[in-house]
Amino acid sequence: MKHIENMNKPRRVAVSWPLVGCLMLGAGAVPAQDPSELPGTLVFAATVDGNWDLFSWQGDRRPQLARLTETPYDEKSPALSNDRKLLAFATSAGELAVLDLERGTSRVLDLGDYPGHWDFPSFSADSRALVCTYFEGDARDRARLVILDLETENVRFPLAQPGPQVSPAWSPDGGAIVYAYGHCSDACGAIIQEPWLVSLATGKARQLLMTGAHTGGFAWDAAGERIGFVSDQSGGFDIWLLRREADELTRVTDHPGFDGSPTFSPGGGQLAFISNRSGTSKIWIRDEDSGSVELFDPLGSEGNAAYKDVDWK
Image 1 (cartoon, rainbow, N blue to C red):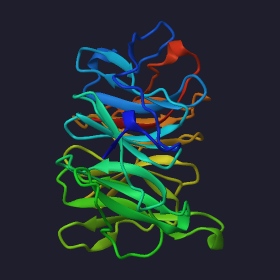
Image 2: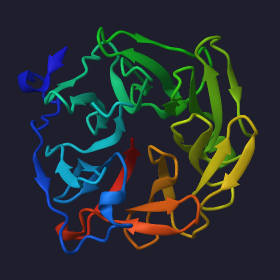
Image 3: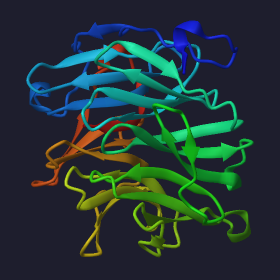
């Protein structure tokens, strides 16, 4: 394991730790609702001073905004463990890092045997492993799912399936991984990625839907009953929900702007996502009972910050 504090490679990201600082919700911020009523923890990437850094919003009636990174790199694809103790993310240098939010330690994973780019981390149910996408030699058509043991940093490839495999999300019960499989790109004049599911018990994968569209950005609800994802199957990129057992597909958003990065609240009653419907990419929160959608802009006082890649546990 190579810790960030002992970095000796130019590509290794320098993450400031402990937390860069806790911020107050300023007058310019526009919460989706009373922020103290938002449960759990939201993590997201945002641009405040020229590049993408990571932030967290802790609700549970004690609202607190914290800046987690402040580096010359761009950080992306933050993923919380189910117990909210660990945060994994990717960097613009193609590396993976893990922050221990409880102990105040951090490290960049030593994956030098696999030169290329890493992205889309997602934790196992027990927080001992990550599933990620490994872009061999930076080539998109050579993207493969990898399961990475966080203690040993050993890797294994759970699929024999050829072709690009991206945007994995580990199910809450630990038994399956949903991901996007690339069927076609330049030859079709468009990127076609369909949702697939692999059982870790059997190693068998099956296609969940046939959309003929660009699909990705998967997220499970806490019960493992629904999968949220983004797709352009109706023209623009919108959020869709698939009820796993009933094969019931529901379109959640219908807006001419871009909607993506869906993630469920811990209790499943709300859905956060990224949208540029206001002109800049922001976090929006949808109430599942009423269907109402409202803006949540915790960095509003910092200027016209843009957001991406939100996760909620």
